[in-house]
Length: 287
Image (cartoon, rainbow, N blue to C red):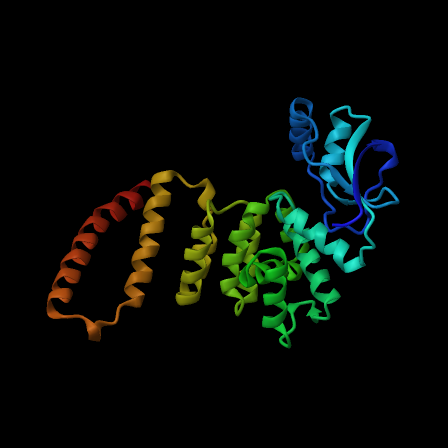
């Protein structure tokens, strides 16, 4: 960066960039940053242009104000930045913070791609130029093609999913697992509704349930009625292991099994049946 200088500038003379990629600033993050600034000061200066509009560092500026600072250290970038270069710098700055909402991140990726001439439709990247666009953006921001594609898919999600991700960005991986049901949109929507309601404990639970729904459509209603996050721990363990058993049995290729394999399998499944019979009887009496 050429033609730069460091100064202390009145916080009230600094203005945020209305075109920057981040639209959501979480109060708890700003509060924590403000507490740190009270102790350590503003370690990294805010970067502004000659018009005092922030290029990077808006969170630091907001936190400094909250910490009671009247002036903040700034780097005045006097370079003539293109719209693309400025926005790219802002996206990379925000990539270093894990609190950016998935929707903000997805829209930022989409804008960068379109600025470089890659066509992005309402359904993520259009088929033409997909790999080239993802490869280019991955290099630019230090990410991966799969991660970028995952975020672009967010733009197709219904509003209730976007609102949930705004509050709970870590659920991104649960919604990603639901993408395995892309050929069953109605079922995928019901799984997404369960994710938004907090019915799953972890993304692996969604993965397992999605796989089961694909392999065993006859179990759809039984599976979708579960609210795993509300289940008793022991019940949750039994139900999850039973699903594992069903899926494992479905994957069996009997023609490849040796006689020894068949004997061991038969004995083990017979043992399971013997354990299940009295358990089912006990549950039936209690219902």
